[in-house]
Image (cartoon, rainbow, N blue to C red; front, side, top):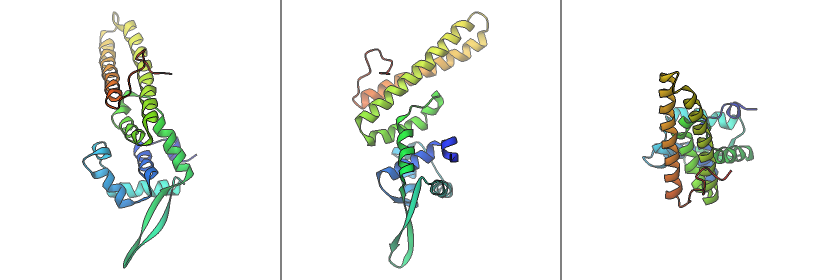
Length: 191
C-alpha cells in the first residue's frame, strides 16, 4: 500500500481531481491552484511543493507522464491519471470527512469536484456528510449531558464543539439549497 493510501492528503487527491477532467502539465496545475476562485480559494501551493507532490504521485502509480513537443523549446511533461489514480480520486470524492475540522479544506475540495461529476454525486456527498456530522453531534450532546452538573469546564468545551457542529449542519443545508437539492424529510441524511 502506498503512503498516499495510508495517509491521504487532500491536496494530493485534489491534484488527481484536476487531472480527472483532462491531462495537464505541471504549470497548468499550478495555475488552477493560484487563481482567486475555485480551488484557489481553498489552497495556496508553492510551485516547488506542487512538483514534489506530482513526482510522488507519479512514482506511486497514480499518474503517468508523456512528453509533448513545444517547437524549439524543450518538451513538456503532460500528466494524466492511471486507472489506480482515477479509482483513488473517485473513492475519495464520494466519501464524507470524518471530523468537523476537515470541512474547511477537504470537504470543500470534495464538493468542488463532486459538482463536476454531477448532481447525484453532489447530493450523495452532502447527505453522507450530513449523516456523519449528525452522528458526531448526537455523540457530543450525550457527552455534554453527562458532564453538565459535574465538570463545568469540560461541558463548556463540548458546548462550543456542539455549536460548531450545528453551524456546519446549517451550512450543509445551505449547500443543498444552493445546489437545488432539498434536505431529506428527517433532516438527517438518507442513510
